[in-house]
Length: 368
Image (cartoon, rainbow, N blue to C red; front, side):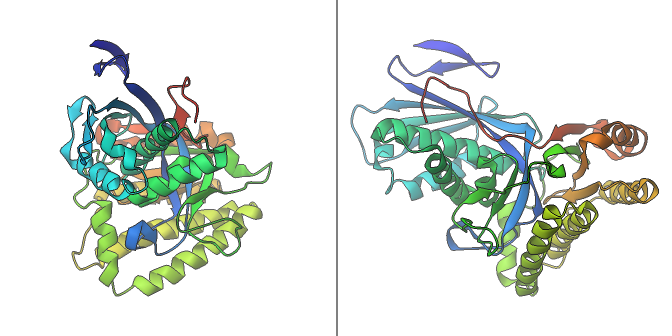
């Protein structure tokens, strides 16, 4: 037995013949929200997101071959060095779905070791980045065991399909830049099964997008996204929501192509507020917005009106606010955040982020 340093902690390596696979996968923030799903994690509507650069999950997968296959999947999931039963159950469920495609899973003992560099369970898509990192590790393992090398396009598409089965929005965290998920009539190659990178023109302003995440509350949210999606099954506004999201996505694609970021702002903010309106009008009457969330929204609106800037807010299924702006506005926006917004943040906590390039392979000696 020997140890090696992994993300600042000592992890026992299983033996000299064990395989170690590592990936870092980013969080993403949706401009058009995925809310409501069909069987097998297929979305009720298409969505679009910005992949983040700094907010990510690092996952190492250790694999040791069993002496004898026993027809069972042996897996443990560690989060920040501690066995995590809650997310481990999600990984177990994913593996049980995959074993017909990956029968070799019965032949190995698996140990996932993951860490986030941002609050998890607080509506900043930690499930998306965590499941994306796990999926990338699994597809890498599949390639090693089967000795079948996929093209880069095939590899990431396969990872997106698997990530989606574990957490819908994780499908988008497989790619960098702007990403869509769900079949979009105007975009060739899109699918409900996997996400696809959205093509930006060379001078698109979105390539300079930045994101300040204002942490109103870092605690795990009261209602999981999975439960929120389940609420949509019998929601009285479900069909209207599908139509709204489809129209908003179509309008957003057009606005981006025309560099009309005042319209982008209008659509993105409508999507964020619609998501929370759906939660509040569900059978459970769930309210995730907090007083300081609303204060931040009002401050952003006033700042935009007084400056004429084309920045905007969006919110995921939690109380924390994403302030999306552009590189050439950075000095003015940072001053605004420090003077007006951090007073509404828990312990004045905020995260400085920007549009990112996507996942990173942490074990470069392994081909993928």
